Length: 390
Image (cartoon, rainbow, N blue to C red):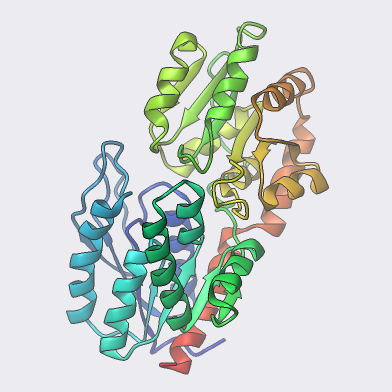
C-alpha cells in the first residue's frame, strides 16, 4: 500500500452522505477506505436535502447549496451546473490536494479535469456508468449525445486512473476510449453492516414486496407495478412497497392509483430502515430495462436486499441476471410484466426458508462487501497520487 500519511485527497461529488443512493454509499465507502489508509480527505459536495438525518465525520466536508428538481434530485443540466460552476472555483482556489476524485456526470468530470490541469494535480474518475451510452439509450438528441461522448472521452483519457464498478463498465470505457484509459475495476457492493439480516423486522400485518431505488427510464420500475396489478386481486393480503424517487415516479403513482390500498410509495430513507423492510419482505425487487444504454449496469439495489436476507426478483438485463441464476439468489426473468407476475406468484406460494435467507446474506458479505470496494478504490487513488501528474 502506498504511504498515505502525507497524501491529501479531495473527493468531489454532487451526492454524499447522508443522502440515500448507490452513489452516496459508494463515495462514502471510498472515503472510509482513504481515511483508514491514513489519507487526509476533504469532500466537496452539496447541502443535504431537506429532512436528511444529521451526519458527522472525522474528515472535512465542504457543502454548498444546489438546485434540486421537484423530487429533490440533482438531475438535469441546470441542476448539474448549479453544482459544477461553484465547485470549479471551490477546488481551483481551495487547498491543493495530491489528487482529486470525481464521479459522473461528465460536466463535473470536465470541471475537475480543467481545475486539476490548472493546479497540476492528477485526478481519478470514479465511473459507475458511461453517461454517453445512457444518453443514447434514452433517446437524447444526437447532437447532445455527440457532445457528451466527446467530453466523456476526454475525461476518461485525461484521468490518471478510472475506477470502474464492473467488467461491463470497464468494457464500455475501453470501447469509448479505444483502450487509452487506465482502468481499475474495483467492483461494486453494498454496506453489509447496514444491510444485515440481524435487527428489527418491519411488520405491517401483510406480506409485501419491496422496491427501493431510483425510478427512471433506465430502471424501468414500472414493470413491477404492471405485474402486481395483475395479481393484486388474487392476493389481497399482499402489498407492493416502493421506496425512491425519479422522473417516472409521478407516472407510476398515476398508473397504480386503482390499487392504492395495496401499492404504497415512500420517499427515500436511510439504509438501516430499508433493511428492516427487506428482512420481512417476500422478495426484494430490482430491474434494468433493456435497450436504454445500461445493459451492462450492475443493480446494487438487488445486493442490498439480499444482504438483509431477502431473495430477489430481478427483471431485465445486466450482470445481476446471471448472478441470480448461477447462485440461486431468487428469480431472474425478462423485463416483462407477465414474467414478473409469475415470479411474484412463485415467491408467494413457495417462500424462502429462514435458513436460506441467512445464506443469501452470507453470500453477499463474502462476495460484494462495499467495504472491500472502498479499500480497493482507496489503494488505486493513493497510487495515482503517488505517481503524480501523468
